[in-house]
Image (cartoon, rainbow, N blue to C red):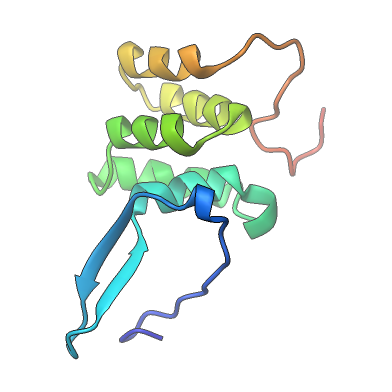
Amino acid sequence: MIGTVALTMIKVADARLGKTERIQDSAGQALVYSSRARTLLDAIYDWSRFGSLPRGFDWIRQDIASGRINATELVRITLRYGNQGTARRMGALLESLGTEDSLLAKLSRMLKSATSLIPFDPSQAKR
């Protein structure tokens, strides 16, 4: 517990770490935590581990609408730390939010040719 915020810590592979922020608490200790954009990406990337779809999509919609994050940062983080499924889901979500075509094209270039479908929300029935 930090102040009034309850945190759940998880173990993440060193290769997956990145895009952190650092603050000092009132006692002068440095606290390092995941950036907002990175946390939202991980809600999509590790959805089965965290049970975070479709809530992750809602968090992204709300944060973009409020100006807390922007599509450019989400695309940049997705390109660096995402995989094919994450890029497809993030691209579909950002497209539905009216994101610029130039940003969506960056995600599209990341994707390999595939014939299989990746469901937007895999926790839902396939049909």
